Amino acid sequence: MDILNFEAFLIAITILTLTPGLDTALVIRNTSRSGLADGCMTSFGICSGLFVHAFFSAVGISAILAQSAELFQMVKMVGAAYLIWLGLSSLRAISKNGVGMQVGEEVQQAYSAKRSLREGFLSNVLNPKTAVFYLAFLPQFVNPEGSPLLQSMLMASVHFIIAMVWQCGLSSILNSAKNLIENGRFMQWMESITGMVLVGLGIKLLMEESP
Image (cartoon, rainbow, N blue to C red; front, top):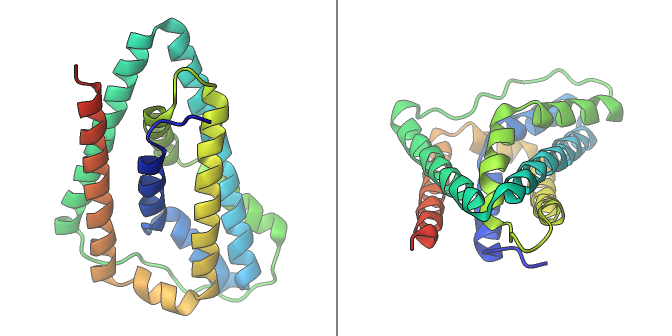
C-alpha cells in the first residue's frame, strides 16, 4: 500500500510513542497495582483505541477528498502547521516545567483483565489530544489515489505494534522505568526530541506543498 513518506511516518510515530505521557503513566500505575499482566492488558486497551481515532480520521479524509483535491492539500497544510505548533509547545514546556511525571504508588490489587482493558481503551478513546493529533497527523501520509480507510488502519496497526512493544517493555521493567519517567532530565530530553521532530516534520511537509 503506497503510504506517502512512510519512513518519515515510522520515525515520527516511534519517537512520539517513546515520549512519556498519559498512556505511559496509566500503564505504569496499573503495573504497580496488579503486575505485568495488568500493565500489558492496559496497553492492549490503549492501543486498541488507536483504531477508533484512525477510523474517524479516515472518514474525515474521505469526505474532504470527495469535495476537492485542493481542499485536501489545504487540510494537510493546516495539519502540518499544527504539528509545528505541538513541537514548539513541547520545547516551551521544557523551560516552564523541569520535573518528571508523577506516578503514585498503587496498593497491590487482584488482577482483572476486563478492568485493565476498559481503563486503557477509554483512556485513549476519550483523550481529545489523541483525536486531534490523529486528525492532523495521518492526512500527511495518506495517498489520495488509495483508500484513506485502509491506509489509516495500516498506520494505526504500525502504531499499535510499536506502542505495545514499548509499553509492555516498560511494564516488565517497572522499577527502572519509573525512575526514568520521574527523572526531570530524562523528561526534558524526551520533550526536546519530540518537539524538534514535530517542528522538523511540519516544516518538511509544508515545504513539500509549496509550488
